[in-house]
Image (cartoon, rainbow over all chains, first blue to last red):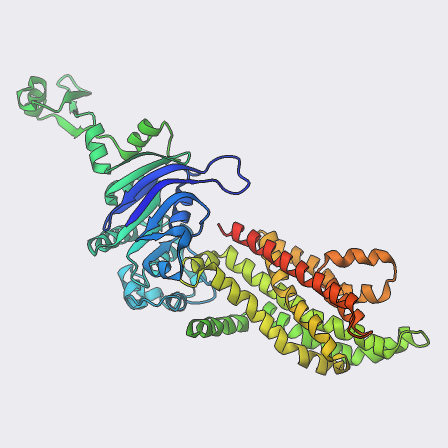
Length: 285
Length: 242
């Protein structure tokens, strides 16, 4: 669905290379995340993949189209939700959606149905300027779906959205994946990446440092230890870290269990953020 | 086509809600009305007994009015481009099948059409129809190019609408060119050639002596200069939209 080969880019008049020899593919129906700190080159990759930048070196094809040769047909197949929601502020949510739907030949779901999906049906006739940041983000997401695109590009899709509505959005994104859509997410929110991405690419200083499944990464790089906290017989608390293997024959572990003094017990799993720092030597923020 | 009509209907509704845009569209007509009544007064006050004839006066004010329409509409389009850049709407349209080129083509040709439509009524209302001859045609066509140049200048030089106001003030200097060319005889007036309207005005004034090579040369340079400016501003705007 997306194939990138030796992709490099330098902004005009810039002294440094923004992207350097990137290689990756994204198959149909995958949720693929670009993770990296600000200025790492994530947005530039997205701008190339959505055809806003065409003077790149190497090759970048989306759904069979080499991006630098794309025509208007290409935009019938992609939907883009930018990080900052943008609408005609004097018009209502519905008017904005109707206007944008006119730009496409492909017809998708009715705008009102899409609004219902993200809990915005009651805001359909409110002016865009009167919507909260979270509502605008949801409207932004809906606009990217107007023409039922095969590929979605979402930049920080849950940014500024309250937890309940963020959950609705995440479920909707997972539902779209089930429908066979390919979804590219750009984010520095590791929790979103952990939860919904099939694979993630760590981007630092314009280079791909690693591409893998977040769950596989977390499993492989976890410490394989169990951490216990318990009440001591002599009073106070104590903690213990044990290897996760052969716990049934571990006397210390069994003793704590039988003492009925256990406070908490958890495996020490690496977070995606830990792995990012370990692999790239950089923090995400 | 249906897409363009739909966008146009949105624009018309948008204009109704925006006083500034309404003023920009009607300003040339208001100016024409103003000059219709003020011209005889000005003539009596300043030019009676001088070599400046009422024909000269009609010519200068007629050219000024004709130039005012594209300048005002160019400024208005500049503000719309800035507004849509600020709000990010232009970027959102750029990733639809309409693309950035469709958006710009629409945004820049619509005011050209409006300006073309307004040219005759403005001269009629102002009472300056006597300057309407075939010789005015190259001037009329070339000053229409001021609209995209002004709009793109504002959209690519200003970061926001506040800076856009400053850019609009700079642009309004263009309106002084017909008066300057007419009244200043010093060779230094050639320096105003850096401002695009110099070329159609100078070309037209030379054409008043009949169709001649100098006039064509000036108009030809004018066309090249306008196209060069338009191209570089388009590239600059595209770079800003990345």
